[in-house]
Image (cartoon, rainbow, N blue to C red; front, side, top):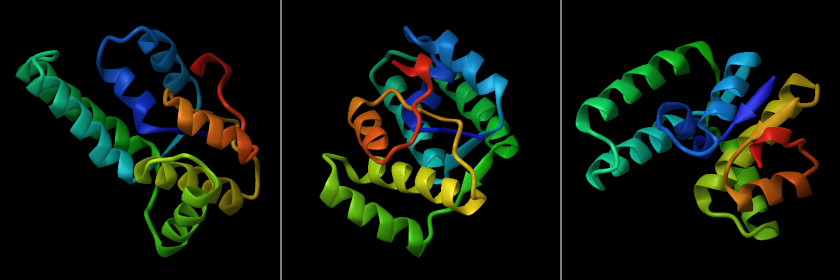
Length: 143
């Protein structure tokens, strides 16, 4: 199973330099995401619309497609165990709160399934650096 961060998921729905790679990666393997991505992805799409970088119609279509995709992905819920782990990660790494929850979710998934995650797809350099430090594999096409 692969774990996708919201920074990469957004590239699935808008045209960015790495969109084709992200779309291919998300189509090729079972995907897991943090419940936080449900809000972070919608927030990013709404922001792009407010900044006139995405039309309202494109925003609405992207959010609807994302909701449909989300229904087919494994969602790691935000629990006390996740937030506790995120607090520890914030002390060890230069992460923002959302990135700490994303990373804690990926680490929880690996522990809960008792098998290594095949890869973490993220486009945020701080999150990638922290995930590598936590010994999580990074999908090679993410950088």
